[in-house]
Length: 117
Image 1 (cartoon, rainbow, N blue to C red):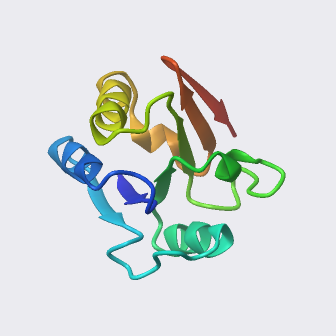
Image 2: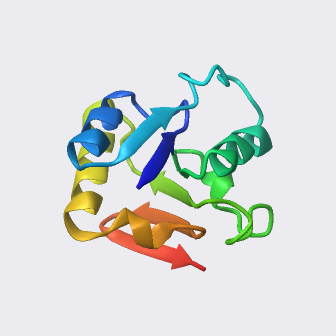
């Protein structure tokens, strides 16, 4: 799966994704740090990448309807430390195939995954 990490996701998550066989890059690496949400979503869509973010606003299906982008995965975590975010992503990868999230808006929260198609 092709994945793009938003600037608010710890860069150490990149290693978790790559170790799981995903092609991952970052908004920071693309030089889009500080860009508005619509630009970030469009950059991920243009590259055909699932966007992983901590930005809850990107989970708004009225603004970013499923199918209008390559996929958005919002991590709604209680603790946003790098270690905590890595654990959430690893736990998700252990039980779910990211390919099935293509074109969807998905939210991970407290051990469950909600997918809007």
